[in-house]
Length: 260
Image (tube, rainbow, N blue to C red; front, top):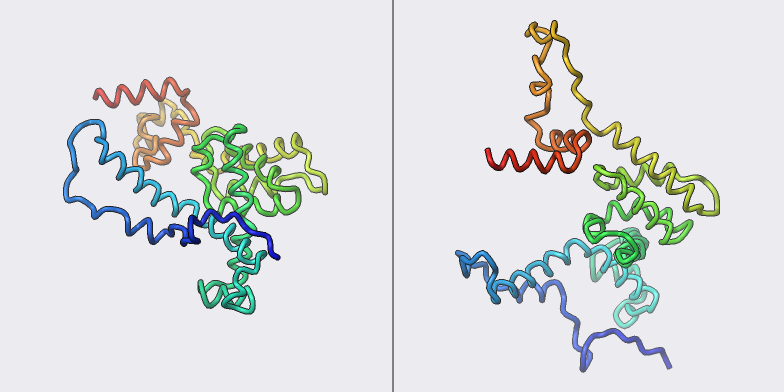
């Protein structure tokens, strides 16, 4: 007799709510706000919560799909309709075995990072995750476990002013010491150094202060430091301010701009 799975499907084996069910249950978008109060009224709070839950399914779809695919594969839950897992993937989801394997490899890392927010990984750091970033951590998890992958991600996240993208994680993973044993201290130092080096190359250069001679010569370029700032690129300007201004100074500048 087979082992009974606690699937949480509900009484009578009812099919769990799918993403389609969630979408169909959302109300028709209103032509105007329900209320004009600064604080959302009860009805708005309920609708807002349901909308955010629906949006969140997109963010973590790869994690849920990968975990579900492994359950179906390992439990041979496809056997009622298909002879092989590959046939099930192609017929039911129009998915290749390679795509499925990639999703299956990524979900343990994503889940471990989500669970680790109580151990120092902030919810903001978790919410910035995506499949491409997690995929770069998979080789570390394969060799040393998901905890080691978490060390690399948290190290990159701790470097101030660096968005943790797939490229950043790839650089951190490439810099890890080679060997069968994962040394947390050595791995953290190597990953941090790689991320800081990546940031140094990516960040905008500091405009050099011009001499009095060049300031009076239009052909020499910008007449002042202000003229040399990247005003046309808000992203570059924000990066520059984050690199060379303290937090309190940035807040003061924001207040001055708001007043102006």
